[in-house]
Amino acid sequence: QDVQGGFSEMLKTRSQIMKRVFEKVSLVSRTETTVLLTGETGVGKGVIANLIHTESQRSAGPMLSVHCGAIPEPLIESELFGHEKGAFTGAIRNKKGKFAQAAHGTIFLDEIGTVTSAIQIKLLQVLQDRTFQPVGSDRPHAADVRVIAASNSDLEQMVSKGEFRKDLYFRLNIFPIDIPPLRLRKEDLPLFISFFIDQLNSKHEKRIKGISPEAMEAFNLYDWP
Image (cartoon, rainbow, N blue to C red):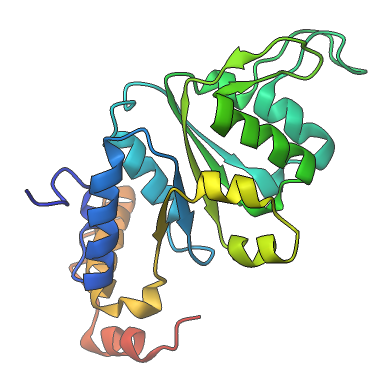
């Protein structure tokens, strides 16, 4: 079976390394396995996470994305796990966290390497025991959710420096998928260009057919960062 069957047009590829990525996605999507996506910023980790969810047995459930680095440190525990009324100043009502909101679905934890050691311990509890505790609660809640994490940092190196828990890293790194940057798969440039032209034509009611050979040559010669 074509591992790209059912994938969107944007996820077609001529690149052998990306075909291997899609093969891994196809293998892991129908399982409950925790996935760790690695790669530079902008390589499409969020797109791959959404694809895994869409192709999974949890596709009828929610898919929630959390950019861990964008949430202020004092708020991240409540954002992830929720809180009980009166748990802290300003907690005027019970609040469901992302893990509760993602029940029966998937949660995508982007930039997992930015979370504090205290949150790392709580995430370890989720992955080990499949439970979590809202802030101010004394009883565990079931975590019926599939976890996909992502990082543009080298988590293994962070572990060696004592910046990331080794036990959490092993729990996250059960099925790693490294996503290559575009500069390593320039053969996909025509597919991306065609996709974006079609999108822009539809949005702006244009009939642009493509780009000039000179522009394509400039793309191929450009030293992509």
